[in-house]
Image (cartoon, rainbow, N blue to C red; front, side, top):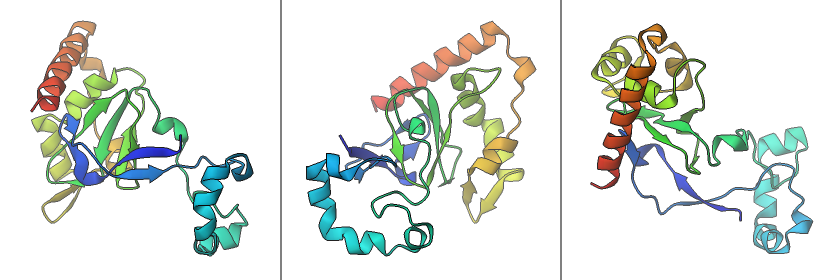
Length: 182
């Protein structure tokens, strides 16, 4: 139950993700280790190393907890856009599946006025690439696609009629299917 597939920045491609063979031991904060003897048996030999982490020492958190956990709802089944921290192009994708990423991945979980697939179409567009290159942060040849840049990205909310949104969503579905099958 605690072993999850882990995706890194380099696994994210435009409209999809590469298969990942990496695994993550994800222990939700607040979990009582004594109620999970197999997990405790696995972690016990690593207790000294885990307990000596500076944040654990300073905060008096249980030794097995994550230091700065993200909201677990970010990773579970549900609509989300996934973004790499850094990429040579604007490479975002949409998923409704469980997706665990480390600190080099970002997630967009909702938008007030547009469907996430319409937002994805804007983010992955050629106009989006120009915006990220000129208005976002660029480090060498790599775009910095962090939360700050995503928050500032201008989405023309009033331009999307229900028909336009529906067409964009259908295009995103078609492109993602092509990427998944390539």
